[in-house]
Every structure is written in structure tokens, then in C-alpha cells.
Length: 282
Image (cartoon, rainbow, N blue to C red; front, side, top):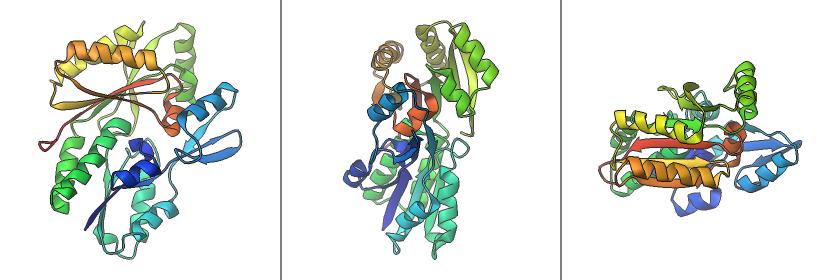
């Protein structure tokens, strides 16, 4: 048998994983001197409430021991672990180190998704479908890696301080941006390791226009899955969806709230726009 594993960058909780035939290694968030496992001990709304009380969160990857425990649940199975982007977190390295600690490590394939959240979830869901349809492990790995290269992610932050603390933005740029009320757009680098400056605008609408222009250049259409994820910014997420639907005919759009770990990174109120090519079976 082939078993699909991942982490909570997919925005899956432990409860949801069981319903979707996957196993998840959850990320953790530390705030107010207490560490929580996301989706189990704390949800996104509870984290926002603690942030609003003046507490500052930080996130951490699943422990090597936790990932190894997941591998050892299935000692006779082939395993594909699709991890969030290496470089944005130590999650991939934990997954890979745990693989090398397993007594039968050859059966485990750890894939760097080079992405996170929406497209990451899509890749994991797709892998499960491919297993159910009888695809071989080698074919699943091949197809997943091909789709990874079609993924593109943009982040529109609301609070620069979270990006500065997470090392995603320099303190000087953060202070200047906050002072003159800029709306920056960051993009995930091709190798998925860093966030890069994509554009700087004066409004959310103009930021979305820049993103839509780029998606048009990529020829993104209804053969792509589009994700809008946000840190409790329902109005901006709704506006983003309307703009995308106006620009991309029959766009397939899914909107989700970010997990505690990713609100910790992107900040409350942030909005992410992500796309990935759909597989032929989907």
C-alpha cells in the first residue's frame, strides 16, 4: 500500500486528516509563554484574540520524533510525505531527517512541495486520489513534481511587523512601508525558499491588478486551481475573489482562513493569492 503524509501547512487538522485518508504532522505556535499544536490546542480565532491582547506569537515545525512516529505507524507501507516549502520552515528538514532514522528508509519519499497552504493542500489531495486510482508510487511522485513547477504564490500583508519578526522583510523596509501606508505584494521565489518583492502599490485593488496582470502572462485560466487564504480579512478576501472572477473566466477559486502558524508568519489581516495547474484526473 501507499500512504500519503504531510504537515499542517495544508490547513488540515488532525480530525480532517482522518476523513481524507492522510496523516498530518502539525506545526506549533508559541504565544504568551505557552506552546500550542495548531488545530488541536488552538485555532486561528483564538490566536488572533491573543495577538489583540498584545502577545507576540512565533511558530515552529513538527518535531523529528513526531514525524518518525508517523512513519512507524505504517512499517509495511510505501510512504510519500509531501512537505511544505524547504527554506520557509524547517518542516522539510524534519521530514527528511526522520526518514533517515527509519529502519526501512528506502520506502519513504519526501517531496519538497516548494509551496504552502492552498497549492500544498491540492498536491496532497491529488496524491490521495492517485493512490485510490491505482497509480504507482513512481508515477505519483512524477506527476506531483511536475505540478509543483506550475505553482505561484503572492502575499499581501497588513502588518509589516510580523514579516520583519519572521525575517521575511528588513526592519528598515518595514518601518518605511508602515509610515507611508504602502500596500506591498510579495511573491514566493521559484525554488520556494524565500519571499521576494513583487510590487509596491497604494491600494489593495491596485495590488490585485498587478497580480492579475501576472497571472494573465502565465495564461492562468480555468485549468488552474486558485486559492485565496487570509488572516481573518473576510472583506479583502471577498474583494480579491470578485476581481479574480472578473479577470479569469470560470475561475475555480477556493477561499480559506489561514492556520495559526501562517497567521504568525503573514500577520493578521494578510491575504494570499495562490495558483497551481490542475491534474488531468481532476
